[in-house]
Image (tube, rainbow, N blue to C red; front, side, top):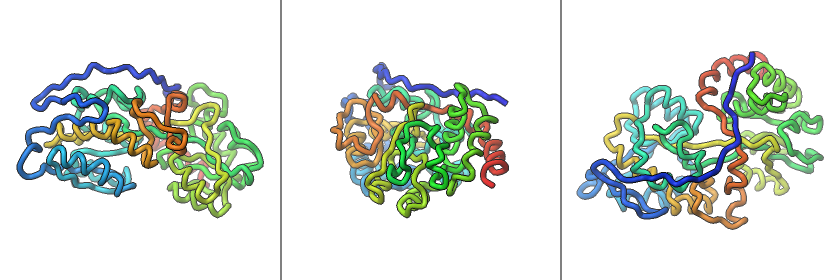
Length: 364
């Protein structure tokens, strides 16, 4: 059974949007670093509470460099709701959360869109959109939030343990990697990307489910473990239990800490784009303030600090990083325009059947 999956090389023409303020609190143009003017509720008196749902990683950095300046500028008190994608999204679905703004991977954000959980954003209130990569402006449609970071999913390996250079997704099927390989489980954010890569290796320009599963099954005997959390990959790699596997670039620094010779590559067919998005929850009383915060997070100031601290790969195209500063993060047109973007709507439509099939045919 052949099914179509949108899979294309990302265009990187960054065309400025004609963005003007509207509504009761127009955005003021402060260049790349400015935030829009606060909505009336946040200008004086007691601080307005803005509830943000996020992962909680790099907490000290975000509190100092992202939250505190915005709180001061807008007379806001930011309250955090911490958890993984699934936990936090379920709270919103169940109505047990008072969140205004939610950070999710594009994979989970698409589920939120289909469940009708997000407000349509007013792009005129987010002038910094004009300065970010086209892929990040509307990854899930113009009505919904942008990606504030774009990472890449490629292959990391220990050259000494593997004994060969890895350049392609097809190298995962090399005899040298047998009993030294790990792959993400289908239920992880990047699991469907491995399935798509298997379809590519099978010679398909469009996603072919049957051939993808057949190809993945060929790896079964050589896979040490299908990992559910990246920490499992890092631990197995550090202990020498594995020597290679697909992983997001942001975790390569942890691999290098254990194995300094670690290499990370974008396969010649293309690495996959991993995007984290930010959206306003439907019914939020602080919609304009939330849009102001999105604008702030996309600013050159925040994006540059995040990149230099190795917290997030930037989407703002106006900042310039040195080679050392760009080490270990996804940066630059020469990298981003080669990424493969999967159609998350298609993924979510088929994920349940893929999980069932994976459990029956692969994870045995």
